[in-house]
Length: 233
View (spheres, helix red, strand yellow):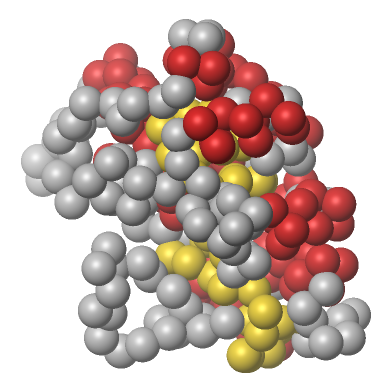
């Protein structure tokens, strides 16, 4: 997808009381603490809010929060390096989903889980998948955790929650892996607008948009020193 940035989607005033820089600093601090961050995408896309957590900071209570307050489909966002290390193929040979969400086959930890569906079991699975030196033998398929492939280039390559969550983990100085789940209302509808603001206030969470994150990354790229040209042989 093009890296041209559209206007930032509307956020309820309660979520934008602080400028982006202050909210980003809080979000990165929360990522380092293992607290969820709310990440929203564009109105002309999914128009959804996901709870994002750094994978290597995930705890059982936070996983329980994701299962309770979100869709229950807990996804683990990973880079190509980790997916190749785990030998995880795409879920389907031909991806025809509307936004080309890059699911791999689902996974479970090979050891240390019971049915795999509890909060503790899903945390065990995620820890097994992101452990240093993790190999394909450490996990089995199918399972109750759904890995997603983050495109190289992050939100500048694809404006998705998958890429945004990994970008936030990297900006926080953490392993490039994150957990996400779509925030929902108690009646089963997707959380949007005021309901997101209420949830953020109740739980002390900070909200960002993918458009804001993409603009921030573009600014960082513009400020980066140019790489010297390679000398011709």
